[in-house]
Amino acid sequence: MNIFIPFNSEGVGGPTTFVDRFTKKLKEHNFGVSRKFSRDFDVIFVVVSCPLVYLLYAKWKKKKIIQRLDGVYHKATPAKGLYFFYNIKMRIIHNYFADVVVYQSEFSRMSCRKFLGGPRKDWVIIQNGIDVGDAPIMEKNNKDVIKLVTYAMFRRRDQIEPIIKAVEKLDKNFFFLDIYGLCTDNVKKIILESEEAGNIRYCGEYSNGDLQSIISNYDIFLFSDQSACPNSVIEAMAAGIPVVAYNRGSVLEMVESGFNGEIVEVKDGSDPFVDAYPFREKEYSEYADRVRRVTSDINRYSRSAYAVVKEKFDIKEIMQKYENIL
Image (cartoon, rainbow, N blue to C red; front, side, top):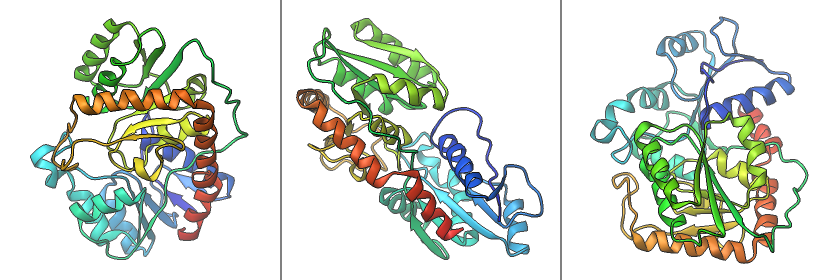
């Protein structure tokens, strides 16, 4: 079976991580995979967007169309009031072209249904996955310092500023935060200004592969984004790193407070699709408290983080779900 994935995977970020990992596993399972158009494909796999001419050709030739969706544009995204126009191509594929729609999480399904409508045919939830190796060494108690880490494509202040505000409330001689990733100019300014605190450092851009090896040196992963199924959270837990996150997006489907990390609630009554920045001093203080809580029993949290990935996010199980629909 030949699978056409019209996606340019240069750079870093969730879709790139998924496509690279997915392509590798497909080839291991003896599927043919192409990123460039040729007439002999059997399935077209749409990840982010896709030229409609490819979809029209697939319909004409009765090829199977699978659309994988994470989230959509809404008022709380940079699209703001123009979100409807940003969603048009996704909506067309979702409602009229796709034979199967794959959502990354229940949050992804809910948000796509809200802004795109119902899919024309079948749908399924398949979360992201990772190669799960042997359990890492997780003896982290009695350390002189706790090394915190976060990484992403930082495009909006709500992805990083709430983390920085929380870390500023921690003991600057004991907790240190390293930030990795590509940043817009406005976000980079926030990060660089935070370095004056003395326990926060911007480490620059790294490839996805390099980041996966780098994070194994850290103790706790910090997260703030409203994401459908963040690869970074899965990668951290696979390295035995517990997660502290604000309750946004799909994190409740990945992190359980008191087990493999801690979840911090955001402002009561805030609408995640309208209010892009639902944070106050109360949330920052509670986030700092949750970091301290994980630190106090970090080995148990670390073992649980790895166990969750082993049970729910092993790429072998994820690939079996994809093979079922391919």
